Each structure stands twice: as C-alpha cells, then as structure tokens.
View (cartoon, rainbow, N blue to C red):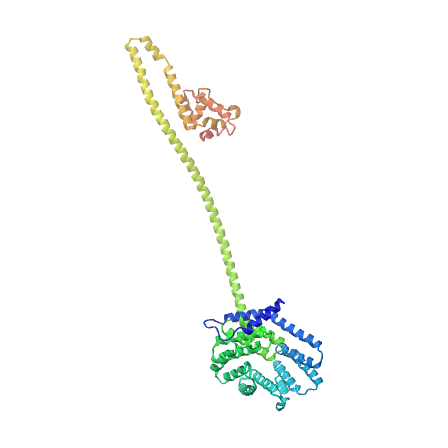
Length: 532
C-alpha cells in the first residue's frame, strides 16, 4: 500500500508540476539525476502497471457479457500496446472475437487500426499498412476518421525513421499531409496544439511552436500528453540547435515514459546519444542499456534497431574506458606497491636510525651520568680540600702559637735558673701526646662533617659480627680512622702509618683484619669504601 501511494505521488508530481521553460541560470543536471533515480526504481512503476493489468484480467474473467469483455480487452490492449506488443496483439484478436459475437461490422475499422498500431510497434510495417488499407475511409464516422489519420501519420513517421535518408522526404511529406488532415478534425486542446506545433517545426517555424507548447504544458492534460508535449519541445530545440534545452526536454519525456512504465519510446536513446556527445559516457551506457532492455521486452523492433545502431559505439567506448580504468588501476596498484616497499625500506631505515639514536642516547645518558658522578666527586673533593686547607691553616697557626708559648715557658725556666725543671719539661712527651690527640679529634670532627653517614655506610659493607663502632666519647677509632683516610684517597700504607703514628706492620694488620670481615668481595673492599 505504501509503495502504491509513493508511486501515485510521483505520478501526480509529474502531472501537475509545470515542466515548461528551462529554469534560467540552471543546468539540466537536476532532471538527469531524477531520471537516474527513475531508471533505478523502474521496477516499482512496472509493478504498478502489472497490478493494473492483473485487475483488468480479473474483471475480464468475471465479465458478464461480450460487450463488457470487448471493452475490457480494449483496455488491456491500451495497457499492453507500448508495454508488451505480443500481448497487445493477442487482446486485439480477443476484441475481434467478441466483436464477431456482437454482430457489429462498424467495429472492424477500430480493430484494423488497433492491429496497425501494434504491428507498427513490432516493426511489421507492411502488415500495418495492409490493415489500414482494409478500411473504407468513406464509411468512417468523424471519431474513427481521426483515429484513422493518426494511424497513417504514425505509420509514415515510422517509415521516415526507419528508411534510408534518400527516401525519408517522401514519407515526411505524407506524414505532413495526414497531420493536416488531423488538424482539420481534432478539437481545440492539447492534441491540436501538439499537432500544430509539429507542423510549425516541419515548416521551420520553431519560434512559433515553442510558445504554443509552453502554453500547453500547465494545462490539465494527461501524463501521455505531457510526454508528447515535452518530446515535441525537444524536437523544436533540436531544430534550433540548442542542445542543452533538447537534453532537458528529452530527459523530462523519458522521466514521464518511465513513470508510466512505457517500454516503447524514442526519448531515452536519443538522450543517450546527446549525453555521450557531451562527455557523460557512463550515463549514455546506462540509458542505452535501459532502452535496449525495454525494447526487447516490448518487442519494439524499430526502437531495438535505433538502440543497436548506436549501442556498439557506446559499448566500445565503455569497454575502452573500463580497460583504461583497469590499466590505471594496475598502474596505481603497482605505484602503491612500489611506494609501500619504499615506505617499508624507509621505515626500516628510520627504525635502524632510531635504534642507533636510542643507543647513542643511552651512551650519552651513561656519559652524562658518569660526568655527573665525576662532577659530584670533584665538587666533593673540592669541598674536602676547602675544609681541610682551612683547618690545616688554622691548625698551623694554632701550633705556631702553642710553640711560641712553649718556647716562652722554657725561656722563663732558663732565666729563673730552674735547670731541673727545664730538663724535665724538655724530656716530657705530654705536650706531643696532647697535641696529637687534639689533631685526631679535629680530623675526626672534620671528616664526619663531610661524611656524616660514613660509620653506618662502612658497617653496611661488613658482616654482622665484624661491625665497628667507636667507644663512648670517641668520634672515630683507629680502624675507622684508617678507612676514613682511604675514603679521602690516602691509600698508601706509609702515608697512613706516618699520619697515625703507627708502624707500617700495624697499618697492614688493621687493613687485613677489616677486609676479612667484609660481606662482599674482599679484594674490592677498599674500592667500595672509596665510593661511600
């Protein structure tokens, strides 16, 4: 139900929307897009016609009398005429069968015209003319006479389209003659305007035909009449050489043909030729395919030959385009493949470069770390030097002052002739012991100011049972003092022995004893101490 509503909605739009003058300042692209959509959805239009035909057949099967069945066969003939010619011919014969039972000889002319129409669609032009020749024109009433003239005009139009160029004028002149006969009988309205416009175009009066047709379009006319008006406008603009306008009206005609589900038409194949010449190969190919499919389904011989006359050109061009596209596709594929290989190589090179750069960064980081450690060592060494130089100078001044005081005390003893006290003072070692003790206390205090965690860190290198701690009141004991000197870079045993006032053997014994208590590598123990 929804599909049927959408179908009739489109039909109403096509029927009532003005399709006259080409919109100023715009191209025909929009109507071609609409036509493309109609071609894509033509199955829906065909389904609607099939439903109409099925309903008529059902009514025919249930018909009450031969008069009703005759009329229904006529309707089925009209439905099939430009849709499926073989079936149209079948229902002409069904009409003839029912007409015979009605005993109405006046219907013979109608049947002959019907046969001529369908035989013309099928391309049997001689047989069509023979059917028309059976009609006694003098016996025809005005309405049948008009149909008779239309049949002859249509016949000679087909012959003009189908024959060679040299014979074409003869058929065009006859077609013009029967057109004049139509104009003498047809009442005012759309059909008369169409016939009159055709006459004007034939007489090269296209500037008169176009306004007449444009006036006809907005009128309340059938979709079939709209199709005729648009097709005639396309013919007028073809005569004027205005291709864009011709394309526009051919597209409108084709759109109407497809919406009515007509399969016998000339608009779409003519349009295909024009859009091909305009450079739109894909559209031309699809339009011709649609035209050929419909012509074969309808058994419309003339339309089939019109398509096949031009189809090889389009097909060859389309095949060449596909080959070109395939060739370009292969070129693009190869180019992309080569580019991909180059990108892989470049990625590998970049990966190698990044890896090398990463290695260089690690080496640089290691060098920076080593430099930082060295700088810290240098800074620490500089700080040690500053502290010890300052303390050394202070100690030297202090020693000079004490020596001066010691000299004066000896001088006083000598001047007082206290010879025994003088010798006793000279022989006493108490002064040296006191000064050495003060010197070591000064050393210990200075060292621990520089390395406050030395004792804990040093014990961290020793086994639990070998840890060394100074006694109460001491800052460092002899063992710690020896390794404090090693931490300061004094590793020579002679220098250590002279500094501490011990024998060389004593220093060796202390160093060996402590090294044996190490909980890690004993050979590298002193190197680990120097890192504390």
